[in-house]
Image (cartoon, rainbow, N blue to C red):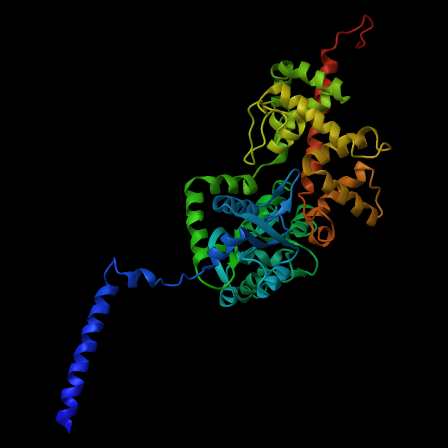
Amino acid sequence: MKSYYFKILLPIAFVMGYFTHVIYKQQTNANSPLLTSIKPSKVTTLLDKIKAKKRLDVVILDAPTVYYVGSDDHQGFEYDLLKDYTENMGLELNLTVVHTVKEALELTRRGYGDLTAASLSVDEARLKEFKFGPYYHSINEELICHNSLYKQKLFPRELKDLIELNITIGENTSAAKTLEDIKAKVPEFTYQISKDGSTEELLAKVWKNEIDCTVADTHIFSISQRYYPELVSSIKLTPKIHLGWILRKGDDSLNESLFRWLNKYERSGKMAELHNFYYGFLKIFDYYDTKVFYKRIKKTLPKYEKLFKGAGKKYNIPWIILAAQSYQESHWNPQAKSYTGVRGMMMLTNDTAKLLGVKNRLSTKQSIYGGAKYFDMVRKEFPKDLEGKNLWAFTLAAYNVGLGHIYDAQKLAKKLNKNPYSWNDLKTVLPLLTQKKYYKDLKHGYARGNEPVHYVDAIQHYYDIIVKHELEEMPENANGSKK
């Protein structure tokens, strides 16, 4: 019986083996119809999904180091980075703007967007919960003090020097853990916690000598030092801390894409330029070098005086205001160019130039007349009962920081029982636009509110000097008075 089954099954096995061999040969043959008809299914990656919808959805923090509405466009260190990436990838940048890190992390946990940008330090706790992309910036936590401590011989150089100082930090900041670690090493050390004071507010208190020192991240201090040049970094309290964007969990396709782009961005020198623009230290009052300015009044201003007068006459603007503003903008350099791409004597953006009909921003005449035209357009946005110095100051401030932020400041002034049409009042309100408790409820959000105040002060300074020079140059009457 076994012999019978063996005789039957052996040929069947042989035939099946033969056909299996034929099929294998066909599948391994490049020209085989069987091979061409079998196509492996393609896996759709996170990056594929982003490309398919043609946009990158980003949860972004409204803050000075991340994103804010500038005078003419959106600005911010992280915003500019993401804008370059999306343009490089042919994508639209779609923003969901939040006002606190807490809100940003809550939306992230709920799966909003493809990426979260909020000046987030990468620490162990966050790494356990979130997936980070490539690190784009590194900072330190630094102890920031007023330079008057030098004269008082209280300027801290090591941790034991902190015992005698009044140091205040914000609540729920990473600085709290840093100072707790210091306290473990120096038990006599004490510090205060402000429940509602942001880092920028505390830096302002240091500047006013209301407290001795506070703790700030490197990049926040760099921005604030423009307005408070008396502030000094004394001790670096932490080693380098990396900042990164949180990516949604999944494959590494977006992470790898960002990494390749960031490498290219850094090698091109763009990262250094961007860092210098936002965080490069620039003392605003360095422009007040009166000696140099007097020399330029005599040697440079006469080349352009006729154009300032012509533009001033056409748009009913005192020509000395235009001349002083132009010096603040470009130091009367027709070839002037900033990192953001504004150009010329009046430093016009591309979009503003198009709006004004300026075809060549490097043309001295086109730039001066274009700037005067824009000045006139901005001025007409204010009510007729705003007059004199108030009108000039409001117009210059809006030219610098944008009309939207001036409207926000006026709205805030009303809430604070200040006169929204007085520059003396508004210049005290504008700096509040750097504080979250104020700007979070305003239409245009965060603004570098100190900047337009300094801008107007600087132009007033230059204006006064030019007027004084003009009076000195006027011929005298017989009785010795100026004509």
